[in-house]
Image (cartoon, rainbow, N blue to C red):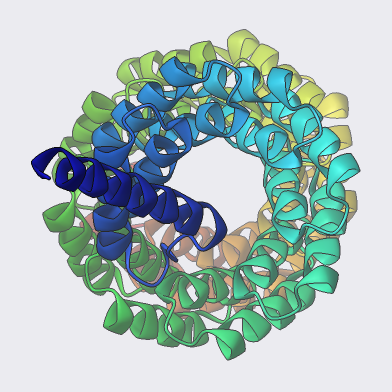
Length: 540
């Protein structure tokens, strides 16, 4: 009787186990609903059948859903040990390795899954994601291509491939992929956001704004969508509107240092340097290793002429990111402001060493060489800057100054003229060309240039003084005196204008007024003409 009872219990357990296994196979629990419940279910299945590879794979899914990736990997490994051909287990283990940033292990698992089941597009897609994480964008695109062939209606793959194209700077291809993802899933805000980023990189700002508006409309709680839209408004010079978006982004996520950085840049563009510094301080408080925040704060200090604090921030930025060429270039600009031209050149050298095609660094180094009187070196740097970027008017202006100092007026005029052809609204270019014309007696040409410069900058006292000298040389003393008076009205502390007016007064026989002008110039630091007038007996 006892034997029969034991047999009956064993049979019952066997039937129960079979029923559980059948139920597990036909009606597995929904992980999305309750991974903890799924875990308990698969624990029970495994307790009844420790050789069930599928049960270990499913329990691994539950662990992965709960964020217990190492436990998931152990279960996937057990499933693989039980069934070496189990493609899905390799694929799932790859997902867990990816979450733990074990990218090489993830690649190996995805590759095995693909080898076992080359018809599953998800394996190619996920391997592409890992290649993207490793910066291997071309390899990623190859896998996304294959995934799309196998799953042509799977929107995420188009989005993934778009991101890879964007990383390669192929923004039009990225936009095409994002658009296809949107066609397939028109209610996913991330796809609109990503396409907006690509439009922004193509400087199609209106289209970028449209996409960010759509993303925000679909999800008004994502801080990064507002921050990205703010970046476009900033590019358009609409910094007040950009700040509104950054404020909203910060309300949604007050821990994102990038948005404080971006708002700081907008404040800087508005000339509100202290507010910019306050935002950079917040960014640095959140992330003390944010090199960009130190760099941006250094720029703000530089704009406030606080060069020592600017230097401190640039040094810190370089310490955190010693391979950023822009950091060295901007520190060089501070050294130039401090008239430490040798150290400025050292920093420009480092910037160029890190980025040999850095046209702006060559231009800056040219300026420093000019300050040291090293005009041939300046000319060489200007030539290189123009070779790298022949559309930049300032590089021609810089080379024109080098030629002027090398007594090559023809080439100087050619360069200033080219700068004007590129941008006819910069007064400095006309002033520089006018000075060359003046030095070589081409007074009418000089007059035309100084007059145009005054039209563009009607409050520049130096240009009035220069044009006044030209009027005097052309025998038009009334016009000359009018310009000298204009120069003094715009800058009552401009010694050269008093000297020019004093010379005009002597020419007209107005010695008392001439002496008063020379005395004023002397009080402002230039006593050469009052001494000359006294030696000639014109002044006491």
